[in-house]
Amino acid sequence: MASGKVKWFNNAKGYGFVNEEGKSEDLFAHYSHIQMDGYKTLKAGQSVTFDIVQGPKGLHAVNICGAGATASKVEVQPIESIVQA
Image (cartoon, rainbow, N blue to C red; front, side, top):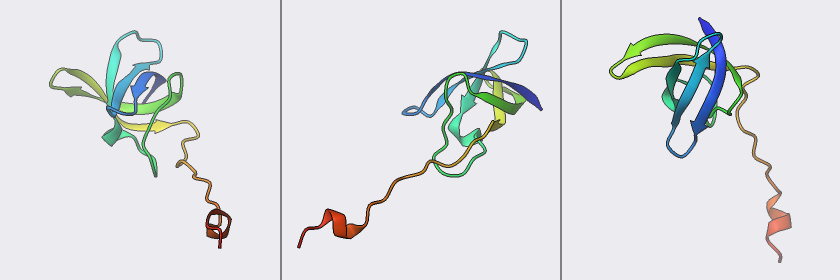
């Protein structure tokens, strides 16, 4: 398993690129290969571990795990505070 950092990740398109530590080549990262619960996303500069496979157009990062990755939390208000009688 390799380690590196996220170069950039576009949430709307669901992909981005990561760089392996000590190397300059960009590795394609697709949201379907991010290993986390909830909304799967990465942030630029985030430390990650991953496996590298040869894809049809170059190297891909798969089994991507972010350091301290957690599911997004949504704050919920009680319905009584939203609906006025």
